[in-house]
Image (cartoon, rainbow, N blue to C red; front, side, top):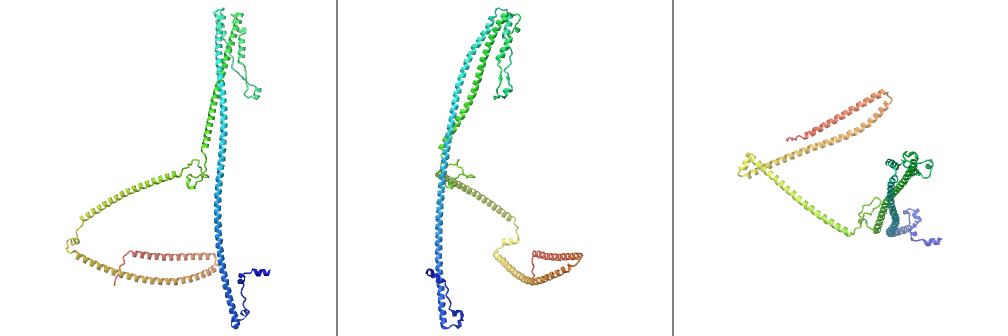
Length: 541
């Protein structure tokens, strides 16, 4: 193990070791060293210096290697990040493609389901329409049969009516052997019929408890009529002037006529029932027509929807965000009302828009220049009007000008130039005099300013002394207040109240003094500001 440790030690281990100083360097002072010890000390210093140099070289080499490793590490990290970013983008592209294909699959599945649904619905509607058509055909056949039956019954009814009329005519022939009065009575009795009430609905508790709530028991009206006729056939109703055999013949004839009338009535009832049934079938046929038309309309709508579905195919396109100009919805964008337009159409439209925009801009520029020229002309017009007013004013001033002596001298003098030079010399002298006066005034103001600055400095020094005295007085005041508070602590409440009144009066007096001083200062300031408004007349000695 020790041998292995000796083998694995490198130069850095040797450089980490510190040199051991000689014993005399630790125990003796430098003045007590011998010549040999001095040489040994110099050699030790050389070795120590060499060791430091080697350590510095090794440190610099390690730092260079560290920088190299850091640079390599940064480069490897950057390359790894770049590869990772590339792979991530590739993964996103793959996921996008997979999602697009899945969306295509879902759309195809939905379209297949819709197509199957439309086909099934079309089959159901076709089946319903065929059933309705068959029902209508059967109803039409039944209507034809009923109409033929009605025609047949009407023919039979005509025959029965003729027979009834023949029977009525035969009655007078059968009783031609009786006198006219008796025949008249027999005719009245022949035409007499008993009054029978209409059908009467009879219900009872058993019928109410039956399973059919609409069950009713109807009496036969013919039976009641025949019973009433049998009562009329009794001998009670036989006139006294009629013999028995004549009454018997009359009863037979009247019974035969009643049977004929009942037969006519039954035929009328049958015809009426068939007509009612035919009317009900007509209403059912109209309802059937409406149902057939509705089913046919639904079938046509479904076929049109199916055709639109087959022709209006969904195409999944991948477009950039700038190429979609449909307003996005709250959750998802709906493209039902969108149109797919070729890029050339948009470019042509944009070029037309640019052309129209340039034309509009040029028109606006022309309009602007036109209005600019109008405003320029208006300005020139106003300028000329003002110049005209100025000329009129000058003319009026010249006309109303008073001719003074100076003006007459100026107008009638022969040598105006010399006069002007004299005036100029006089003005120059006046200017020099004013400049000298101004300089004297400035020097006086400077002296006054120096005197005021000295006064300010004196006042500042006095204020500093007063501030120091004020601090001392404040300290003494605090001490006296403490002493006073210590003394006042033992006084009675009346003394405390009196002391408070004294202090309050003192404060008010101090406040009044300070306010009077402020008023005096403000008055002085007002007086100073008021004096500034008056001209300063400096008296020269």
